[in-house]
Length: 508
Image: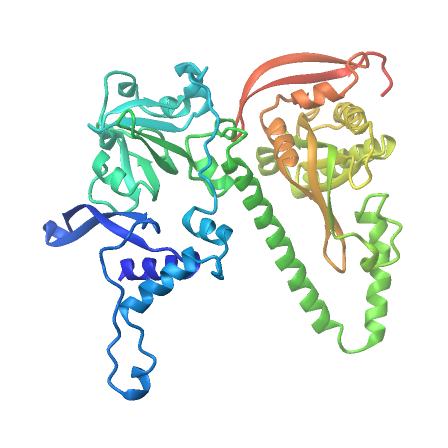
């Protein structure tokens, strides 16, 4: 059936004939207790040379009625007409047409390459951190550097078997071996790191997805793969960090795209739900619609940045945009959770009110915007929605003013003790937008927001923890810094970070 479909398709599309040559055929026992049989057949498909004379004579059509007998074409007539079409100067087929039929339409592409590739083996394992090289005996000869870090120490000695370290997820084969890999060389392969000696290789198993490449000259197979990760949640659950994924790997872009789509879909569904509920509630009279619009206009200057607060109604506000150069600040109170258990609700509200009043004065003074404050979390941004060149400097002065504010706020039930905060800052691009109908809210999302949050959570009490990007963007003669060194950041990897100490000339 497959042979017939291919033959008809090639003849219809390319006007060529193909032939099949049986290369191999074998059966494989599958199913419970090998009770079923799976047959594997390999054909070699080639195009029939149009110049080669066929041994099969042209057909002679046998007609059973006089009407069709008058239109019968005999074998001699076919041969005569073919000769006239190709050799007669009066032939409707020109020399160029005959040449085009006999020769392929395009020549095979021969790529240029070096005789000797100037890449050392140690460089190769770093360039392709996720690869496995195995021979025909199912022995692993080499793996990428990241795989070597994830696999046990036994991997570094000898030539272990592929099946000892990896479990086949796809395609559904009975055994992960060289023979089966060659048979399904055109299929994507998904492998899972197995348990060794009853112990987990890592806290969570690592899934790999890629392509098997046959190195026929050496009799080897190269597995080019990447981590199979579909979301940041899967990345956090895996033994890898974001820095373990190469910049050229599309897996990295897929993670951010999936995370962004998830956030946007959540926001959109929330907006649609709000919109539907508003339509139901306000469909009685037009007066209610006008009243609602007036109330919305009142909230715009309160919840939106200055660049958007001049809008007359919700429809005048932009939906979303991306700013390349922004700086984000995260701040929270140290041991706030335990503090809420020890103090009365009135004490906690009084504490937050006094602290945020000072924080708001700092954002107003340095023209930054408080995006959100939930509990003890305080989020500030500069550079969006209106782009400014000194966004990092504004956030730096804002953070120093916030740190100064904490020196004047006392912790409840602790006489003479000031509260402590952690502050984290990062610079980069992010997505911002407006959500909500009755009360429009300004929201930000992206890697920059996540990095600022990580700087805060991995920071030190009463310190301003900044990334290398913030350090580079700030004018170094203006501020004093303390190099913290390399810190392992959850979900990111090992980064070099700094502490912002203050301005060289006190101006806060």
